[in-house]
Image 1 (spheres, each protein chain N blue to C red):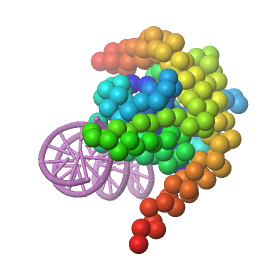
Image 2 (cartoon, each protein chain N blue to C red):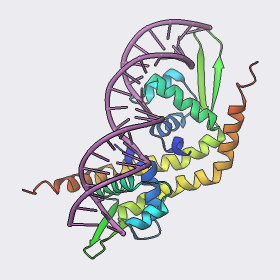
Image 3 (tube, helix red, strand yellow):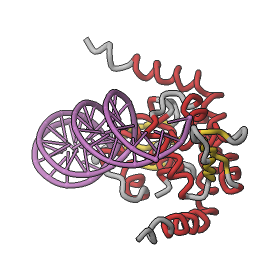
Image 4 (cartoon, rainbow over the protein chains, first blue to last red):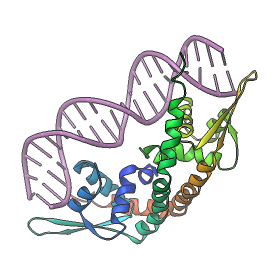
Length: 108
Length: 108
DNA sequence: CTGCATCCTTGAGGATACTG
DNA sequence: CAGTATCCTCAAGGATGCAG
């Protein structure tokens, strides 16, 4: 149920929205590797959970802006903490992984 | 790459190990809904990333204990923060969701 | 008890084309 | 530009059986 929150795309989207309102195309450009479909689905889910608001400007071409709600901003705190942990420990994780993978090969 | 860390089972496993060393069967009983296969895979991933250690006691029957490494314990901090956020805001998330789902039905 | 291998189902998610 | 719909792939993950 909370799977959405632990979800990779949700995390990245929330991080993108941390520094303010963004439009759809900005998000898509900013979130590396996300497809249009997944961005749509992710934003829907976040909106559904009351974490972001969606504001439509009926202009041509259309313009849609997404903003973190107060609830979303409060989530952004622990999410950012997790993200920072990962960044800070990337090297260590990578080293551990290489160490681990190095074993088991020298069997012969 | 960090998908493993955001992963549902990894999160739950790390939380289970937060209060000390556990053996395989303890983890399986403690993590609701996890299959033996997924627990094995999850533990291997965590071990590979240097987050848990695996200690085998060559007894009969075999006994295997899993413990968070210092790196794992440091990850446990932000992970717990995220978990606590979810618990604290479950009601609000649920309310938002019901509000959201209530719309769009009265179309006809 | 712990763990690996196999089979099978399900759904996440990408690619693409179309609409307002 | 923003969004929907469709098709298709592939891997996550459950169930089961076997082994040390």
